[in-house]
Image (tube, rainbow, N blue to C red; front, side, top):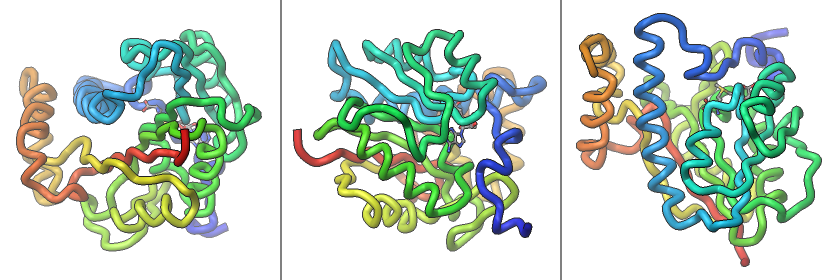
Length: 251
Ligand SMILES: C[S@@+](CC[C@H](N)C(=O)[O-])C[C@H]1O[C@@H](n2cnc3c(N)ncnc32)[C@H](O)[C@@H]1O
């Protein structure tokens, strides 16, 4: 089998759970930064979407890192789907109301039964376009009419690529390709596009600078604040991750 034939299932053991699997001093700092920045983006995008009886689906829960944040946002019921059995069990123990231990391409749950779907740091690890497309289609089926999905993808341009690229257990798409993935495979309406992290220091030539900044006391917080302050002035796709907010028509 060549590298390009591999699927996310071939790599599942290597796809971990960001903060929960961070190792060492710098790993923990980077993960504080990721979480601070990613959550700010998701909170902005979901500002008007949480009702008192809303159900959210977390696609690719890993160990359950996003549970406290989703509860804090006010979701009444938090459902998760996770392909890896051990991580799914950890997420169940962490307190998800329901966990499906299966591939997000096919979740055994009724159509129109979810209000909001979120997925962070997962599509980057779904290597084949047809598998990404299958998850988009399945999420549309699960969402009620008018429901929203907020999810991110790693940006090709931020990593110096000009078209879809797979390396090891990660995949990158240009912003156009990410948008086309949604347009060609669903009836979702794209409502918002936001950069998430690395938008200030994300230029490939500046990687050393951001590592130095991260090593300083509270560097993770300073980097996150800087990102937030100036991200309006940079092209969205220079952010390592780009978030889309899409809505299922109707409702
Ligand atoms: C890098 S982790 C991200 C975890 C969490 N969302 C976060 O942001 O901390 C990606 C998770 O997605 C899971 N995953 C990957 N492909 C999946 C699929 N097709 N269906 C369900 N889960 C999947 C992996 O097993 C892994 O636990």
